[in-house]
Amino acid sequence: MSTLPWIDGHVPASHPLSARTAMAQLPALSRQLMAYTPQNLWEQDTARLPWALQRWRRQARQFGGGCGPGPRLSDLAGSPPAD
Image (cartoon, rainbow, N blue to C red):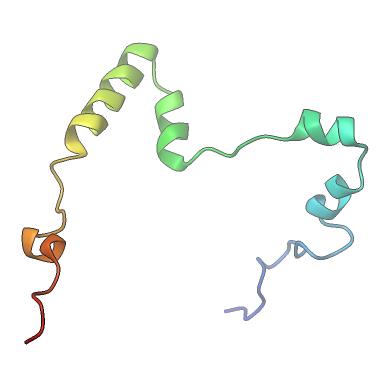
């Protein structure tokens, strides 16, 4: 097991040969063209589905959002005043 702060076989982000360092040295226009916002894994999986299943999956997630465990009412009420 490696104790390195990066994956074996890959250069760290601070290394001169890393892609992050190379992209920082590109002209501003090139950086804007290459910029993207990474998606989370759930969105990536959903994007691979046909549009009807994407819609169904998003609706199911929205519906299920309130079904999971949440804070207890006693947690939300706060602590009683000290005597």
